[in-house]
Length: 412
Image (cartoon, rainbow, N blue to C red):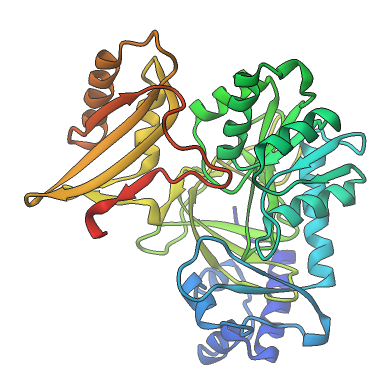
């Protein structure tokens, strides 16, 4: 998937704005003697932007539009040290709302739906992004925010919410609580729009199995508007990316070279029309691939696969590079295992130890046999055998935000 002539013109317009404003990336481009790009080859030689650059620009070094045009700031979640501050103009907010509206429409959500929004509000882009798109759509927004599960379920029943917006972790927590209380017949949910964290097939099937709803993956990150720059359609698990607003590349994380469509690598995103803080070739660290060919739904927007993980998810254990997604794949293939797991890594007497806690689906499972099967398959996948402990369903912690799957105790 190569950048189009129209997208190149949009990139050149943003380069001009960045250089004129003297923002961090504008200075980077100016120092490199870059004022425009003539073709795809020149575009692919543009320097990347990284989260470290964005932190160095704190507080408002990213601001590219005049201050009087900035109507809002957001900050990315999950960062350490200085936060990343992203300024938005009124047009940026409006564009983001249009993209999110398109996401809802792609999922078959209409202005007759009642959209139950559980992600956080405030500096984080999640809650307000879901609400912005909901209001653009003309649907009823129920802006709950995270937490207070008792109130969430009460409002869900009383207001007859039809769409749940949440992280996968909180969707699972709510589903399990609905099942425990035996109130499924009082819940009117039909669809779920899930974002903010990677989730596996087993978790998806568990949520669907309990709630009986259609689930949709939504993609985005605060640096690039927020959630809503892409979503999967009813015909496929692959996500359509709104390429009239953003241009997406897949690169080799080690070399930085562009990869052919279909190959797994790191997502790099360029904002084409963003005013407040345009980003060119921003390294997201998310791992996916571009899906070639046409979608059965008829939409012509480019597609990417589900997010497999992040380049910074990698754990080095006993000299082996291990990704949580590899462990999830093993667990998903073992009958009797639930979707929930936790990895604990420790260092004892000069060697690394990996302990893997996995929930059984119910009490009828042979815990010892399941543990042996998971240990055997994990060794085949990563090259060494972890210590596997099978625990009762519901024993591992649930989260109202993102689940912490990996606890590395070696550096505590």
